[in-house]
Image: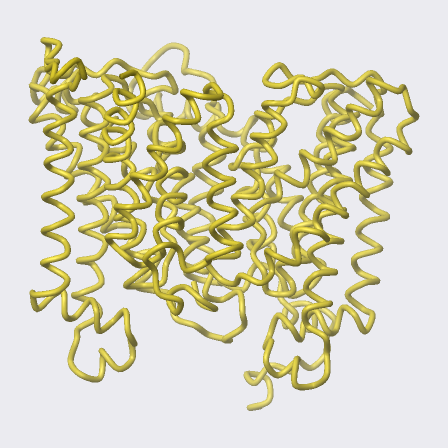
Length: 306
Length: 305
């Protein structure tokens, strides 16, 4: 396998795990705009353990996951007291505080970043991503997954039905944090280098958009969203220059056309977001869609008319 | 003496935060909507202003424009962009299923606009920071050993005027009554004859105006614009708004000034790297200890976006 495809597979696997980390809180109705903070925690824990103590990869990644999960659990209690706009702002602030703290920490390399000695090939993230995907599918099929969905749809009724919604929300947030930390640890080892600039606010925004555009009703959503938006830029990398050259010849410009700008893919991501929110705000993959694919009669009111 | 100078500087810096924070708080207060395009509108005014002052109008319609005119067009661009945002974030979004992340739809759309506008500017003008050709002479005034730059003083005056004018608009005018009615209860306001489709764009026009002005003042005062300039200012304005209390205009004023002061004092005592931690720590602390902020009411933004 060529290095190009190996790189793409690694980043795809990491993005899928990261997207599931954000999916779990969003599936209980809490927008988590602090994904980069959890990812940074996992990545820096793994990097530090690997660089300082030379621990093996499973240990460093595992500890990074636990650290992110525990931090998620601890901050979930105060943060989940807030709701709506406040929750979004609080998670956003959390990520900024993590980034700021790492930036000022000399043991973690500050603004210079940190190199990670142990390297993992594409197979480790891919196998982990498959395992995480199966885990989340299983989780959504359990009673806990059912209470998560119920909490998302109506908190008050779920509470009245005797579900401890606070427990559900805190667990989902903490497990999500742990998965984001896992993605961070794998990132650190796959790229052999971590710097805090690669865990900025935009990363949190992207991953939330992957999840919301994919759809939060089923576990298929984040998978589709992350896969689509990881592979789209690669497709654009080959298609965009041709389109640009074509347009240039159409207008009558001869000669070389500038290389495709990385910015275009973000323009497309943003435009798709706007269009999706107008046309299909519940995300690409919904429960109804999946039921229809299985040739089952849907529970949605539209089908009952017939 | 140095400390007093820092204090004066922090008020000057805070006045930019205040303007952007007021824009944030207005959309949240009236529409319960955290508008993430605000940093981009701020940047758009500065960048369009720079481009017109540097190159002139597109398609060779004119040579480089004088900077005040260029900034005026930048301001208009911000207002126009804000009205486009209104069309696609607010007008078409109707709740369909009523689940709990549904309030987030305008917020997510505005994140989409953030990506589109910022990256279009990058594609058009490049990613580098550019020097803005402001007033040529270094207009500095010394009052008892404290240095004050005249453009900054003028901007402070403009900011005070805007905030007073906005308060008057909200309290006294017909449009303001409509806005407050929508803030209270959109459905009831509609029934009582407030035309939502005419009043809501006013919020976005004001947002564009405030951000455009802040961007123009920033370009003149600091002499530099870049596609990234909105991110830092925007996040600090959010912090200011939260500290002051969501939905409260005077809260945003107070919060913006507090953030400016925190930033300057952190730089003075601990160095520039700790600013982010200080400002965001302040925000996190406010959210945990007093979520309604210093001057806010508890109801706004709670449970809804």
